[in-house]
Amino acid sequence: MNEANKPVVLVVDDAAESIDVARGALGQQFQVKAAINGAKALEIAAQHTPDLILLDVMMPDMSGYEVCRRLKADYTTSHIPVIFVTTLSDSENEGQGLELGAVDYVTKPYVPSLLRSRVRTHVALHRQQIILEQIVKIRTAELLETRLEIIRRLGRAAEYRDNETGMHVLRMSHISRTIALGSGMREERAELILQASPMHDIGKLGVPDRVLLKPGKLDDEEWEVMKRHSRIGAEIIGEHPSDLLVLARMVALRHHERWDGTGYPDGLLGEEIPVEARVVALADVFDALLSVRPYKLSWTIPNALEFIREQSGKHFEPRMVNALLSRLDECLAIRERYADL
Image 1 (tube, rainbow, N blue to C red):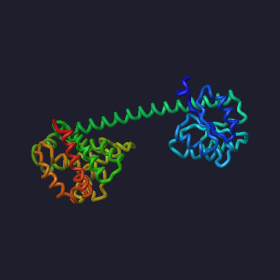
Image 2: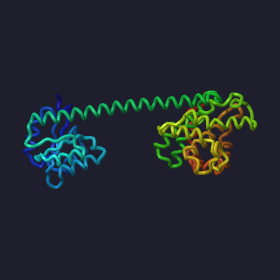
Image 3: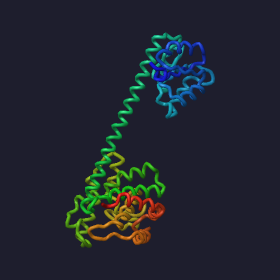
Image 4: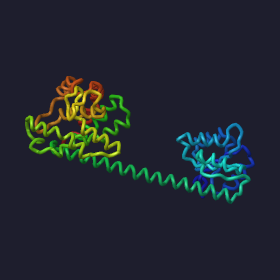
């Protein structure tokens, strides 16, 4: 086996002769690195990430137990398998090491064939675990992407009923993310809004065409029918433990609530409205104002901004309006990128 392809074993022992014995037993199958104290061991482990650490228990200054404790407390080294080395046969000491996260014990003086077998077994198990984790990670990413694509397509299905190209759902989801970031929201939460917001109007699938596509103002009865789409959307998405679907359901239900309490379906007021719904409410209206709909022509940018400023503290949370205005160029660029065809 090429030296560079050999698994790396870090031998930690304050006795040089023990290191030499371990190197002699393992050197043909493994790259052997050595440390004569705990501090050096932690430094090498952090820099080189060995495949396994052979760790003496009884060392001055820092015991093997303390070295193991620090390795397992650091996420960059916590996954490295540790085999404790001791001259003690006390089961209580073995139990202490296993509780700290060690995978095995070997005793000194070494039996070379036994040492090679133990190290080889645990290195193989460790590498197999890494491969399995990578496979799980890939499969999880594939499932997430499939779920996101279903959400996007369902969102566009709703938009196709009253928007010729369905591009509104793409624009408002990206604008939602931009507003969220502008308001100080963490990146991961803003990203979740981007993923969930395409489902905001899925309830339109339950609204009759005579109402949804009416080319004019709705009468009172028709308006009550239209308002049902928020609850219909929440029912379509349903209850699910996934953070993504929990947020998608909430946004579908709450994106027509208004900051001043005059929205629907429940007339929530101010901070009673979930913050993600406040973001989506503004992004949805901003893009809708600038788009052609069956019941209206598109507004000019100045007219749309004038309306949004006027509705700050009424329809929209002022903080979100400020976030939109602070990132207006980004929002307009999104509209150009996903323009209706």
